Image (cartoon, rainbow, N blue to C red; front, side):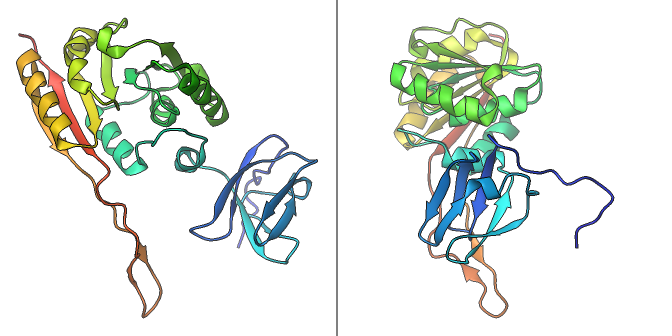
Length: 263
């Protein structure tokens, strides 16, 4: 039942929507009145969605029901165009918690890749914070810029074509977050850039990378060192047939955290 005590938010032309068929089939679509969205369950004329409230049901040309949902940050992260593997939302959540990232935080990030991590960080540091994202490849910067603009957070990210292993220009930052092959080469630069007790965070797919990074952190001046990994197990819930889903997102990488101390 829909209450009448508030005005329902409706879809306008140019907005993004999530067309939901089921848990496996969700489509991030920009609504344009002259376009048609095609699926294996029939097509949908996007002009018929304009003016509809979020949550409304709409039928395809084959009579199949879709729901019009408002995209979440997670939807954007999983559906954005990319040429590189992104950090999974499960790992991003741990980065936020362990790094104490909040509105007003100043965060250095590298490398940018497709901009997914930068976009997530920007969503939490706004309106007064900033993400300084370093990337060496121009093609990735262009992709990231488009993705960040679509997510609505481009104003809170400064994209920089530079190599973090050669140094960090920003000073007195709250957090340095890395998703790159050689994070240990950035540890000393991160130490100089961080404010006292600032936090260093690094995502690495292999334990060899972690070992090199942690040993360097110990030598440079970080404490409260912690390395974790996160496994997520989804369940198919149905009366009398509840069980884990067949496919599980298990190991994606290791997350290493530490805090700067004065030495």
